[in-house]
Length: 107
Image (cartoon, rainbow, N blue to C red; front, top):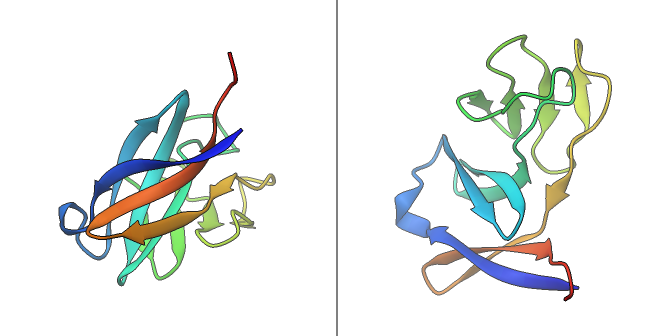
């Protein structure tokens, strides 16, 4: 089941910054790229480590360890050493809150 989950207040994430959040059982990296908010899985497909702390370059995130680049819009890998894309999640702004659509397990 897919649901919208409240992640953070808009004003808590300045432009050019990112923050790791856990929504349900999913660890995400929220990014504010010049006023556009993105959510991607917080894991580099190259080495399985977190993307948190990576540099934001336009609509790209750069892995802080080995420099792999990923498109924040699509999750597409843009350069080695990574060769697999990362997952992206829909984001919306409701009032002053950033919300992310994530899949939740049904009981």
